[in-house]
Image (cartoon, rainbow, N blue to C red; front, side):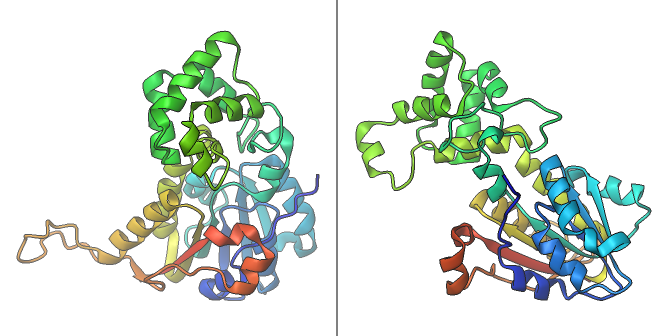
Length: 311
């Protein structure tokens, strides 16, 4: 299957980055290279660094971006390690960072990756298939309390206790090692009335939860976005697209804290910490997709873009 992925909020990101032809830009979620292609097209003497931990993405993007030659450098890593990657590349400060968070359309639509409940496949869910445990291994070994926490905290699933109990019971009979096996166990745990009211498949939130847990996604967002703020040049921009409230809340809080500066307790009459604001918020409220993009790309419906500039 080819790595096809429509770049969400493309024009808004390009405008938000305020691209300088000779600047250094980092696409922290390279994917198939959609956003990167348009960033690189605007560079003259500048450089684009593309980060991804998915070998399929790096291969596809490498082919798509080969026309730019040495203007583009691809680097395999989790964006949580972006500071180490920049150090390795001899780069101190950057003119712009782009994050397009979450799972890609390619990953969801490639059955053998195990991200989707729509296809029967091995239950993998790893973005980097060369390291870490699979979703099947996590589900096989996690205790009841850990399962509840994953489903509740990462999936915002109100039936987390019931689903965790169903998983414990089911795995005593046979391993839950395929997407359909997990899908069916989750669905079986829903009360009939609740299942009838669901506007989406009852397993959707659970699949999201286990994917986030397997890939340590929220921890990566905290680390990666915070590191990007620190590595921005004065006047540099950071654009972050999120697709669910858990990601967006983290980004919003990081931006807000960096824009406020002072860390003194609110009841202090004067600031004694001396911390200066690092960021200026370009978007007080997130940018969402326009109607024409919503009609053309279903993934755009939940996309939120936040932009900030380094002071």
